[in-house]
Image 1 (cartoon, rainbow, N blue to C red):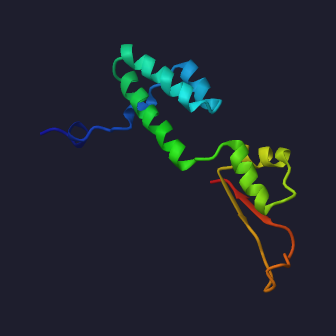
Image 2 (cartoon, one colour):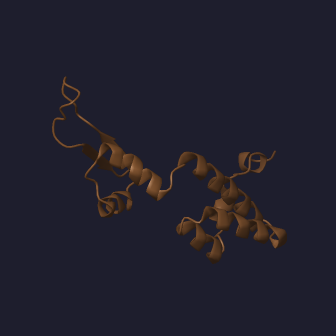
Length: 125
């Protein structure tokens, strides 16, 4: 009788395959569209498990576009609407290595009066 792993292969196993350096560099630089084009070129001549890894990477990059729809500038402008004195250097520091950013505003009963500054709560998993 076949084992569980033989009947239900680990679909994440291709993630162990290292991406080609050029693709990894483009992804690290945030150049998803360029990375996808290069991945498509690699797919022409690749074989498993690299082929499976590249297919997963295209799907991952597509999903990232849905989950993180804003560019750096768009996100900075949106946050500046609530944190009017936020500087670009501070924003760079906030996003470096931070996995989540939550900001909230404490407002008194009078909507015109803000009690204190905006609260930035940062945490790492």
